[in-house]
Image (cartoon, rainbow, N blue to C red):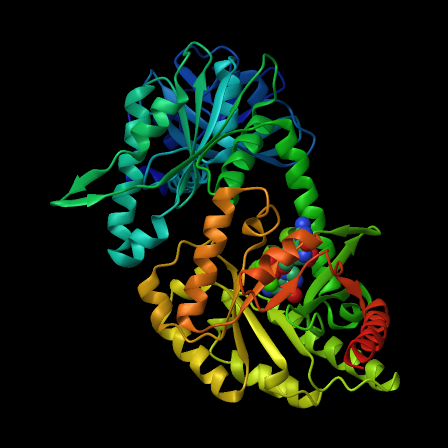
Length: 543
Ligand code: C2E
Ligand code: CA
Ligand code: CA
């Protein structure tokens, strides 16, 4: 037989053999297909080659055994080195013989092979998927450098142009890597990310590679910046490649969070990521409504008037602890922001202001002239329902907008200037006071500042705390103060830590002071005591 004819597929193809493996019966079709006849011994048929699905030869006697029960197996059969045909073999033991029926399964095998291929290899880029990638590196038997490359602006390119262009950029970056290292192994990680294993034989300059991947390129007369992040891990001998891949990926992940784009994996990074994950999980639990009041609290930092030294209000600062240890808001606030739940904390802050006012009332203190500053994140101000939610919550706690200062950082305002500026105007109309936080750190342009709807400038503490000893800080400080004066906006100096700084700020005409000189941020009850003490000093001062 040379090849399988379609008509023959419909004829019954069978053989029977005895315990010695000798063919005792054979259908015409089988005889023709396999070039066999009765009395042939199955274990001794050099013209027949049997193969498993991986195209490895299998011995005839391991297939044509004497089974006790019916069973089925699949093999590829090649007669006289002809094309392999795939067959399902049904074995029926009967008396001292075994009947074998052969059915063709070409299509089934082809589909299975395709599926297998699709599971190991991306059909568009030809890159291996993760498992196949790791297996292939294991086969190479070398150690090397594991890299993970992410095209950070893939999504943006896809939005501005289209997905086709984004894929071209992906392929371009990939081919730049491939040209550099022809013997590297590559893997597709996600639409915008691939991994590469470069064997140890190469001592390469990773910075040069990184710059090469980031070099701009042209398509149809348009210039593209690929904006590539590269995380990598240099393996030691006997390192587990799968773990190395995780490490390279972690470095890339870190690249994204830190805005650094070339990062080598270090053990400290793994610890940091573990800690970050722990915080995220714990925060998620704390943000549940029933845990919110238990796990978060507000610290109130007094703000004083420089001319009278009287307390005029406080900044409300969020506090949260994990395992009993306080975590800095600089760490947890960005995580809450990225979870989209920061507004929950802002509204919670209002509930705590209400609590504070009730406690002050209980102490017979007229809190009517105190102002409370709350920090507002960019994400909140971009939410079209922000103002509505804020007003509804104020009403719920019987608070009025003219008692609330909203602190926003300059950078938050500049990015979406027109939209944000309208929101600010509307908030001002309701009576809120808009305070520009961390002023001086954002390099904002003066033309923006003239158009921006705000009421007060908070000079950043980096210009305040060492102002007395540092001439350069003094000139920045003085410029900001005169700018505020020209714009006719009052100034709050934060981070005033001692009397000298306080006197300096007052002498320059700063209206309000916040800082350790007066007090650190205080828990609610301590703040009530502070107010009580201040009230008496105020009365004393007045009399
Ligand atoms: P910020 O708005 O600039 O707050 C002032 C920070 O300076 C506070 O840090 C405060 O404790 C600290 N500080 C005040 N006076 C002094 C001083 O004299 N010396 C020194 N060294 N530090 C002083 P904190 O509480 O760690 O808050 C850090 C940042 O976290 C805040 O910076 C603010 O951007 C953010 N944050 C805090 N609470 C919230 C919140 O409820 N919502 C939002 N969106 N952000 C918040
Ligand atoms: Ca602030
Ligand atoms: Ca600040």
